[in-house]
Length: 102
Picture (cartoon, rainbow, N blue to C red):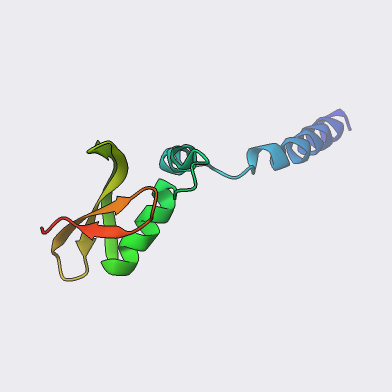
């Protein structure tokens, strides 16, 4: 009988902590993307990646933030479905993709 109570107690404990362990996982890059928006009226890195993928459908290889001539831009590299690597810049303030000619 004691073993049954111990097992029941353990199960209740596991059920009590399950919602905590089931909290949504936040990917590091998504956290950075949310911070990059900064409330300046621009777009986040995550939004820039979405726009670049509309222009070049495929797998995102990398995405980072840079300053070019005093303005913030996002550099995004995408592997297209036909195996080509496309690089694009997205202006952080306007959200406009700007092809880098590669």
